[in-house]
Image 1 (cartoon, rainbow, N blue to C red):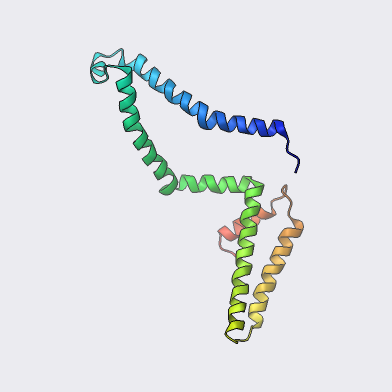
Image 2: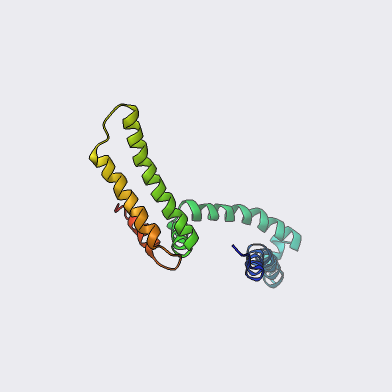
Length: 166
C-alpha cells in the first residue's frame, strides 16, 4: 500500500492537536479565565483561593479524580460509549470488515471443533453438522465475493448478527 505523506501528516497533526495541545491549552485557559475573571473579582472567593497557584492545585486535585470517575461511568455504565463504538464500526470499513471476518471465523471454528470432537469420540458426523458447515461456507462465499469497502454488505451482516438472526 502506497503511503501518502500529506494525508498521514494531516491525520497525525489532528490527533496531536485534538488529543494533546487543545486539551492542555483548554485546561490552562479555563483555569486562567475562571480565576482572573471570576475569583479575583469576588472577595469571598478570593478568601477561599488567595492565589492562582492554590486555585490550580485545588481544582486539579479535585477535578482530575472527578473527571476520571465521569470517564469511567461514560465507558462502563452508560450506553453512550457503546453507541459511539457501534457508530464507529458502522462507519469505518476496515473495522467493520475485521468484525465480520472475526465473527465468520469464530462461527466456522465452533462448528469444526464440534465435528472434530465427534471424530475424536468416534461419534458419527451427522448431516445436520455438515449442513451447518455448508451454511457458514456459503455465507462466507456470499460476503467475500460481493463485498467492497464502498458497499454495505458488511453493514447488513453486522445488523443481522447484532439482532442474533443467524
